[in-house]
Length: 143
Image 1 (cartoon, helix red, strand yellow):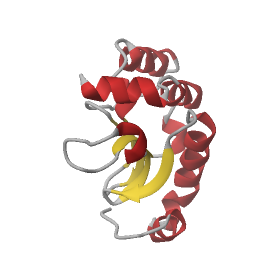
Image 2 (image 1 turned 90 degrees about the vertical axis):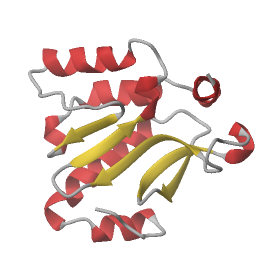
Image 3 (image 1 turned 45 degrees about the vertical axis):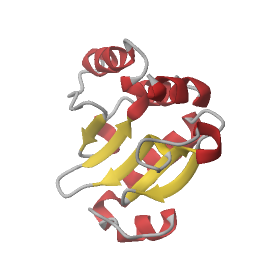
């Protein structure tokens, strides 16, 4: 779902009722696990947690570095876990946790797709989110 919502509350109001509780659960999980220094914003048509420009400095596209994003797409919900691409082995650790829990792991480069919160392994997702402090993420983005 591409959204023009300017606030998280407005975005959630647009989410289909059948998905809203799952989206709210993921929103709470991200907020709880997020390292200090990232800021919550609406960007790219999704709920994003970003590195403020005053911390990252100029970026290749002039926009804040997105660390995590949460979206309700047409056929699924998605968590964009950009930190999983920055720390060697982090994505592999997430996949191993899913497999150990008997859950389907459906992730591209950074996009973890799921039909409902019950499809995820919350402690593993939270671990990936908590794993990359802002300074490390900025340094990785500069490589």
